[in-house]
Length: 481
Image (cartoon, rainbow, N blue to C red; front, side, top):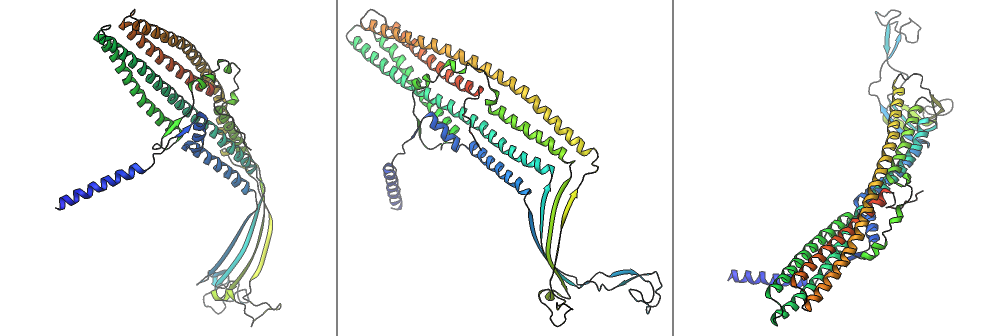
């Protein structure tokens, strides 16, 4: 009886869960254009978020450096109780001296004697404010310039990271777009071959075709269905890659909008026939900023030889008493000539200038300057290497783009010819003046031509992205203050 009850309960829970799941609305996928994919990635990708945080760190670093040159104000307060004061030491000068030990046996003139410290009470207190102002420091001036250059470095690093993100997202988008077009083409081919198969079976029933003719077409249809399913899986993988490049939630559906014809309009072989401006490349700009920083490092090392000048002001109150409690009260019973009690807090103040002049630093500073100069030479050498790398990258990307474009033109012509052959062959077969094998061969040739065309089109798109990157045109430059 218990087993029947438990089985009934489990069944009811399962049916209820199924009903709830069916009642929940299916989440519709968000649709993105290429530009929307790029914008989403630049806003949400982890790399993009981190470089923006680096920008904030650099901006905060500039403010921190500026703060070093502002007045530095600090306050202090202390209370000290000496349970046993240190002794007062002096040389015994004989009777009538500062300390009289004439009654102490064994003491001679010239002996060191110790007496109770009657110049200091056991408890003391001090409250004060200090102000320090930097007037001149060569390292601070150089550091201020370096902090601003460091901020510029973070901006250039952001541009370089954005370029990497845009390149990855664009390639993933084009892959999904091409796969979608291929799937549509397979669906169209399947429908055409399926119609041919049904017509052939009717011809077989009427005695105008053989059974093997229908079997050959069935094999072609089966292959088309298998290849379409393969590209359906490839398309799912492409969407997953696009989500990854965008940092889009993996469990949320996504669709892309756009058309191959729109992308083809964007392919212009003349758009790259111009001289290269190295400064358009984010990596070149980043190296330029690194050079500025290294030049400032050299200046900073040399600034260590310069003197530093500062001003200071101290103001406070101090007092002493025989005990801690006496620090917080005024003894009015005993007063001096001015009417001020012995336990009163008295103010003090001082101000002045401080000058620090390095006189001899040995070989340390000189060798530090030399090390920074050598590092600067290495950066200058890096410019030569980077320019050569950019020239080679442009040459390689240009040739790849040119070859892909020529291949696309050829494959487009081949696809048009194969389509014409397939249509004519099918008409001849249906009219009884062509063979079934010719139809199958024409369909296979058309499918291969279509595959070659879309592969060539994808190669052109990818080559175009790489060529834009090599010229520094993939990501628009952002103007910052």
